[in-house]
Length: 639
Image (cartoon, rainbow, N blue to C red; front, side, top):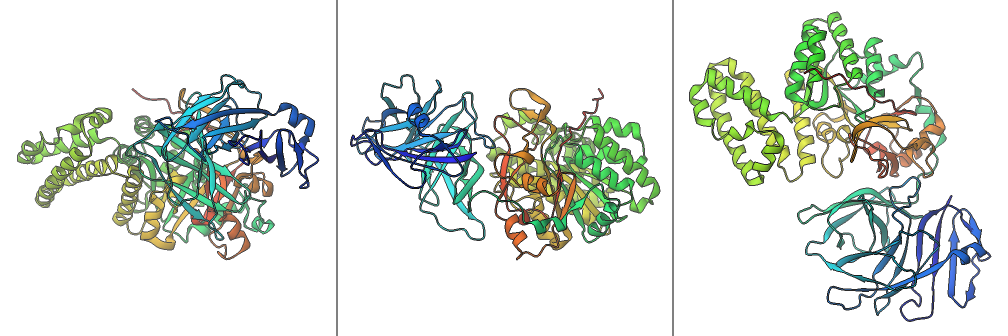
């Protein structure tokens, strides 16, 4: 399957003379034409030049199927718009290995007119155009009638920043990439820019941008089209798609089923204070099962005494209390009441049962503690705080009961009542209470848990109403982890969280938990990223809710992916410790080229896909590869 670029001049009118038609789609049936080696053919229809990277279609079929569509782009006042980039796509189509729809482009002439040739026989074709001044889209209702595209003016153009990545990144004359809004039917616009910080107009929504060209690659990245949206950052990687992995990479392969694997893990992990095990999907069981095996085989060193989990810190206290007592019934009850579905699973329960047995083998000082890193249950923390004040400090209770009453609302109700300025006012009230409560706690040690509840509420406000909620949330989780390590200075920690949090690279442009902890701990922090070749996970579908879903088959992807490269070297569960890899080696250069990979999270929509790009060694120290993802099993909820 190859990429085909066609440049066509459909007639000799001023509007189309010399204006190219660009077909950017994986061709299902690449053309075989006599001009394949650079020869040109002139016809009454004009000049046609076809370039295929890997194969060609019969010329007769190309001519027979090509049709010309025409139209004009005008602005809101009716004036023609010259040199606008017009794209044509079919919402019913989809490119293999990409969330983008195949498209064709052309430019308008000085009179705003355009003509675009297409071999697409679809009945649902759509024309779209995006400029800094406005946007337009229209269905092709009649191929013989000119389509008028009138720009809708926008007062708040989308701000985009093009970020050069890769060791040999060069400034290119222009970038061209599609952006897609996943509505039904989807919207798609093709943008071309020569600026590092372009501004374009799009209908409101959250888009995905992606491009695969022979000399550069873009995304997949989010593009936000809202009045108050921050700048959308698009990473531009030099060079074409990923190539096969260097054979030397296989030297770092450690098969998970090797009899010495546990001993090798123990030797590697002993060098670190924090080992963060990333989840590619919140609904996959592979990592939990492997961690349980490590504990069962004694592969985890005894000084790992903290299991920090991406779940609510307040709810995790009950889980930890049951674990400390070794009370399996109480443990299952506490897990069933977790506020999210991610860790309320049979697999996580089995891991904690293994930890309970491990704790019986250890002394009290060495016991494994469960710590939650997230803050989402504000109303429970508020209730406990008020109960403690009412019992221990009646004057403080009466003084702060009414100002803090908003915390008694549910999350959705609180969101309706509280905007950013009011959140800052509420935060100031918490600061004042904190000062008085610290003084009171000196005389009344029983108020220590109330101070924890107060800190919880401050952190809830900190990330929920921040300008950068994603970065603020990771900062809160990092602070919780570092605090747990300070309380137990002789303890080491294992972190269970999503790849996007434990990476020491940025998390969608925001500082990640891993980045913050790496700055604090330096080389004693290790991040393990997890990849899946394919399989099944539990995830939230945008229209069907939480369900078991089959994810993309990356091991056999038609586009080059990191999973496909690793699968070619080891088609079984494998561990790739890259922390000792020389950073100036050819392997390191390949890993940091911006490898395309699948990254799922809590939500997955098959029609959108989940492709992302990363420089591996700028993100993780080690990779775990599972050819087949296994879904977690929901724990039965206890009323």
